Image 1: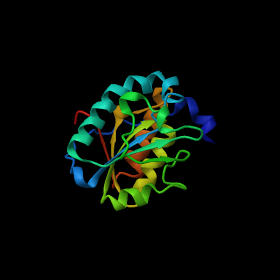
Image 2 (image 1 turned 120 degrees about the vertical axis):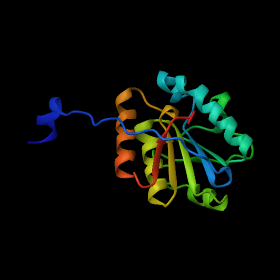
Image 3 (image 1 turned 60 degrees about the vertical axis):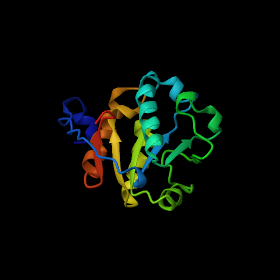
Image 4 (image 1 turned 90 degrees about the vertical axis):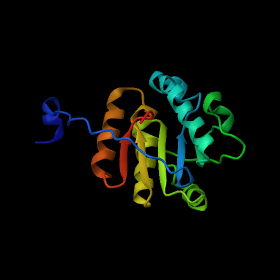
Length: 179
């Protein structure tokens, strides 16, 4: 049998536990992934997440945590939603789903002394999944606020949560922005 034969009988695992997190601002970087008008703007779940992500961004800036934004091909920082736009001193990298691939993201984080990253953005099954996994594989601890990631539907968000919580459990903490 293959997964195709079993598709209708597959049951989702129970939801993983969300945990409160204590942030150490100097060593915790906030990765703001692909919150652009041309992709997030087309995803109602992403647009709905922006107020919470904006609060997180404001808190990170107030506490002095490094912030890095990411872009997709044929976009610029001017395409970011105004409420989560990059400041002049906040770097941005451009890549596909894994924001470490062919960018200076790892170097930027290490030069700032970052050992833990908070990953928010869209698409959950793209940029969030691959960048969080990439961070864990590079030795960073990952904080994933499930209410700060989005996709076009709930299933990709569920898949991303399950994948990161199981495959990268030793380095990933699932939480909510208010925790």
